[in-house]
Amino acid sequence: MRTLAASIAIIAIFGMPVHAQWVKVPAPAIPRTPDGKPNLSAPAPRLPDGKPDLSGTWEPNGRYVQNLAADLKPEEVPFQPWAKALFDERRTGAHSREDQAAHCLPQGVPRINAAPAPWKIVQTPGFIIIVYEAFTLWRQIFLDGRELADDVTPTWLGYSTGKWDGDTLVVDTKGFNGKAWLDQSGKPSTDALHVIERFRRKDFGHMDIQITIDDPNAYTKPWTVREEVHLLPDTELMEFICNENNRDLEHLPGK
Image (tube, rainbow, N blue to C red; front, side):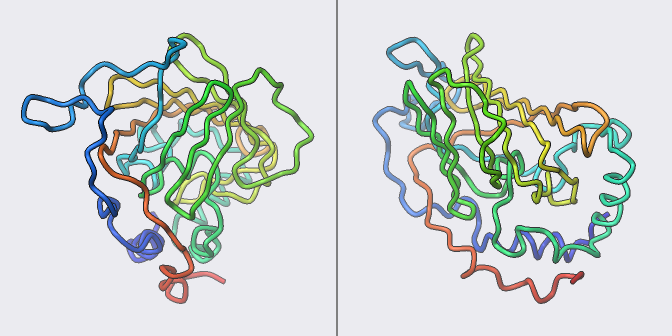
């Protein structure tokens, strides 16, 4: 397993507790209980066109930042032999300095969704923007019917298109640069990575995300995990400058 010291050092890059948001202003669109508290079990909102409204500031539960496959048995992650050998080396903590997050580089998809910091969905009929507090990143998800291109410039977060399957938003992402770890324990990815995310807002305050990893260069077959995020009402994202918080790199093992 990754050493405790290495795990703490990586998380310390985020600087301050997730809940230390900078404003607390009641939002008029948030349903309330009789005592004025946000009613997070109220029905999920919808846009005028009837589509589910995924907008809001969302927080991961922290379970999957260390291990994307936390709900799977170890043998259920179908590593290619080289990927398993690399993962076994990384999870000892000996390569913590090689983690891109330790150098304030983007965490990639889907890891960024599980990072210990909230993120905000801004939804329009033609596209969705996800703004991440961690590393001050953003994603574009195009909903205009365009095809998922195979010849885009490789990036950390890839190129995303989305479509609705009933009340579930299905997001396909390709065009990765192959440099990102899938989680903090070091599951590798390559530039062949294809991520399929299925976002379903169960009620006002809770959203499920089903994630399928399809990377034939690193895994023998696609594999699927599930995460849940919850709404952070009445607050906003904070500015996050990684280089101002990255004080532990010198203490991480590895080159």
